[in-house]
Image 1 (cartoon, rainbow, N blue to C red):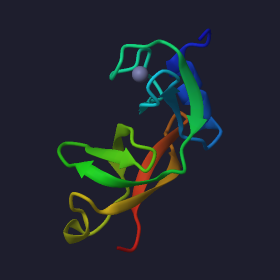
Image 2: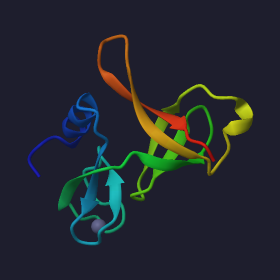
Image 3: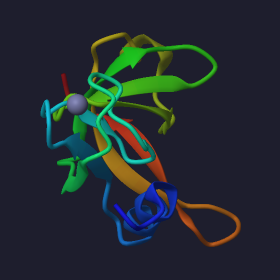
Image 4: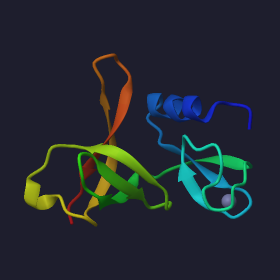
Length: 112
Ligand SMILES: [Zn+2]
């Protein structure tokens, strides 16, 4: 793969797309900034487009969202009442613009 994964990932965000990588060897899905497959160590990764639908996997100083495609990313949650934010809650990707004009992914809770 020639393109810098991080650049491809951020270019996707700029186009309103959440891109991720899938290993051609073992079909594991990986966050879009991966260089090697975390499962088999393979470097033959192909870009795919996420639906943007997922669930909250873990909560801490920031949330970890597991997308329907199976990969996890650390991401910001849109403001919501605390009682609606729980591990396993369904979320959907939206984009918010940062102060520097770039798009950043924000996950909004969907009706459970
Ligand atoms: Zn693999």
